[in-house]
Length: 461
Figure 1: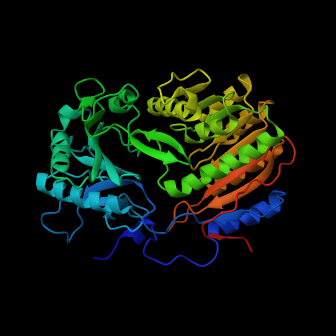
Figure 2: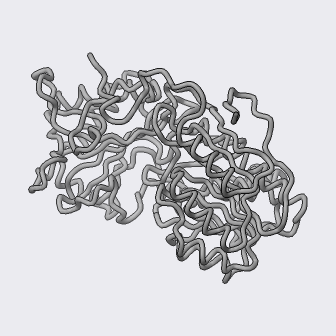
Figure 3: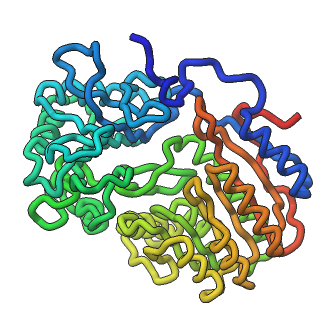
């Protein structure tokens, strides 16, 4: 069977080109022209080209012509330039557990006769059509959390939602493939391209900190609302550079956690070096914080006297953040004997967009900011608000959009920031995308913070 990955923008089946990827080359050229760096930016390859994707978001569409008669749905990605779904269940970038899970889902969909969503059809759709799948691997157990996104307002609209979950859960035959199963419901009028509707938070994730029993089968309104937790634990657990984190199904999580863990270490090293010269800079603002991985990691470097405000536009992140903050406190304060501790006001989450969060930088006198925005970047209004905060002396900027990073960096230069360190990462092997870490300072020069890297890496020429 010929793979469709190449038609969807994935090069998992082709050898990688020698040397630096083009976005990293362009970044180095820009840095030489615009940033007076003591060292040229490095590009790090910290994961394999295959099986790096431990979270996958796939569309569900009609089966292609020529498929087996029993196959009703295609599970995969949109063909480049269209809304046509091409099967990519065999993508080599997927974690092996995701490929196995997709095989099981395909069998179950065909057996139950689940109707796929017509992404190319702008007209009314069946209220029981399946729109998307999100699959997340818990690395320690290699078990998969599945979220099935249905075209309906609530569970009552889609009887097959529970039937599909039950079929998958009870046919596992002791293999331990499934971590948990969720259903999410998006009304047929919602055609904004987003996978999840930002309605009420998932009850399972909200109850995680309070200890909800697994497999509660509870919806947000008690009768099967936008989110339905059907089987297994509520959240996926991960250890990232020594700290424990939980990720709810609606919260952002990096698809390549192996490389992201490398980035987290570099972020911590940069901040640790900064603290050696400016020990008083312990008030940390996190923009686009998700469940608080970067912010809490920096709080661990700063010590017990630090203040952290983690902001994210997605309110679904708050329950997991509070759970992660409590876990962080137990890890930090060994004297607590592993007992649960209340999360103090100094470790806080705020549901806010980037502009609102940037305003807090000046109003609440934060000295260090860490940001991981979407591909569009921070944008000039956010940069201006950060620059207006005279207390802010350091910005750790993680970007997955080279063009927006360069634009934001040039705006930061105009407002008195210096780019002191720059590094790129091959976070999405087999694609044209890279991740960038830029360290900006308003406190003068800083010493070099990059650690020796044990894994293979491509250095600039």
